[in-house]
Length: 196
Image 1 (cartoon, rainbow, N blue to C red):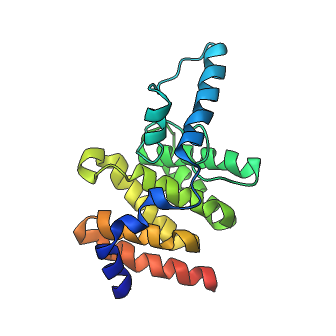
Image 2 (cartoon, rainbow, N blue to C red):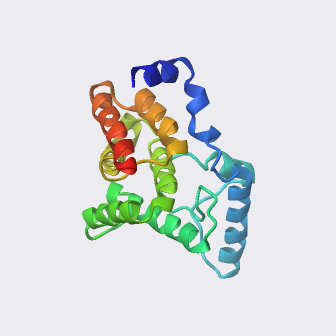
């Protein structure tokens, strides 16, 4: 762990989320949003997200208070891609950015999906990092709850191997100094549970 911390300190950009190979290209993600915007406008629906394609592409990995229209990672199964967007709604509900009668039920559903569907875990961790891209002070309660869900996720299921260092570096560089040790202690535990 000490060697990883040294690597994270020396080369944090190498482990930045935007360099993760499993991501959809932002232009593809934004273009698919244009298609959904067009179909929603044709159906008479009003959308809250504005901006052009370039602006949407830049925002792919930035905090969003509205559901995502498409998974952030490429998935072989259309059903898995659909489940990814459903889990983002659970994330928003737990964090208080989407109305939910029982936000804790949304967190329980999130954790159940992560435990039962290993091929969805990468998407779920990327979604967490996306939502944590805003500093705690700026994000307030929603960001704090998202950090709590990250801790719960690490305690219940590991990030996929190719994403471990991305998650580890994010925690090392973005978690509040007083809480960093807690998250870093959970990360290796999650990795061990995947090999057990």
